Length: 455
Ligand code: GDP
Ligand code: GDP
Image 1 (tube, protein in one colour):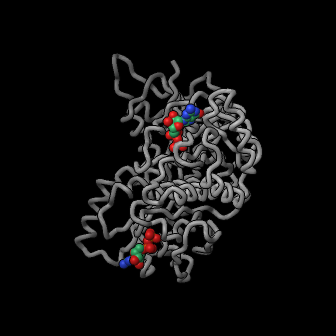
Image 2 (cartoon, rainbow, N blue to C red; image 1 turned 60 degrees about the vertical axis):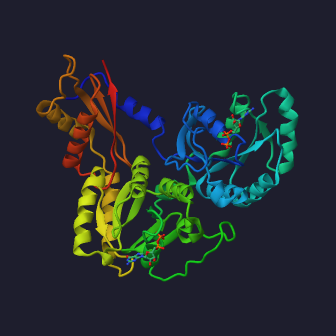
């Protein structure tokens, strides 16, 4: 089935250059209305519907991939915070705190036409304490006459203010050059993996599913969860926990232990936290409260992990509370609500009684193994050849698209590129994915399959 004329090394080089690996993370922070969303849109160079999202609207997506001067990075938009819930200063402080924890560099946006406010000064303090590189964006400098306003912002003590008009694009190039200088080549969070450090787990799930109970259980000590305010103490963000004889890093456990963020209405904050933890992790353990119906929020969290391309384990918690009837309905719910992720290993646990805790590590290991599976090109193509012969694509408009050749472009998660003679329908792509899983396993990992059409 392998066609002549494709230079495999060239294709793989292409894909590697396209930056499928872990990318450094840039956070854009600042007071409301200074132009963060406008700037993020400008950086992305496209009209993502970011500005349309108003505060209070829960957004699933907070990170976007961007590219400047051939380098790729992730942009975290911290706009859309629920100020009504947190209050202005608290929400801006929370943003900054989030940025400190999740980002490799920060763009701090100030409205140059307004000048530095007390809230801005407060954020500067937080940023300084974090020690992450900061690029100061003096926004709304729409013309040369605004340059003087920008210069006033030297007073913030963050170095050179970059005069920018996010709205018109003025000055954004120079600012982005400074951003690239500030960003490390690879995210600090992933150095551990390349250097053989502990594997990184994100323990995620909606409030009250039992994350903190589970964490205490696996850490094998009952810690008092104190009701401390964000930013008052510098907790370690991650925790190293030995589990099943292996050392793991549970990322962003500070977010789990800080109950203050679980106040009513702080959904958006929780969602940011989850996104940040998932970004940093290799495997997401999504905890679901088995005593309650599977909710949209549960599904959203799972989607986040899948879209981020992380290995996935589903843990159904509070199993000790289930009676026979609930168990029956749970299985039906899993079938209908979570049919798309049947490939994820599942454990039924109780953080309270310790039930099946010993099954967690094998499930995580299975998922990580699937995540790292590589299928040699020869094997992949003989498999694709068999599929094309036994289950050809349906004929459309007198034409029959054919898969000509395929290659696995990467792992963590496995990424495939299929070259085809025509557009492959979604149904056929799903069929290919199903068959790939039947043939090669891939338990616990999302698969990314892209199709390139060659005439
Ligand atoms: P955010 O709340 O910080 O995300 O701010 P937005 O991006 O939503 O922008 C707030 C308002 O400022 C909007 O009306 C924007 O059109 C406007 N704005 C953003 N950047 C600029 C700029 O560079 N110049 C001018 N004149 N207005 C801007
Ligand atoms: P988090 O918000 O996800 O961190 O959830 P918590 O760990 O704070 O747990 C929320 C509530 O569920 C607490 O009252 C826990 O005692 C309870 N809980 C957690 N795990 C279990 C479990 O396995 N069984 C039972 N019955 N209750 C649990």
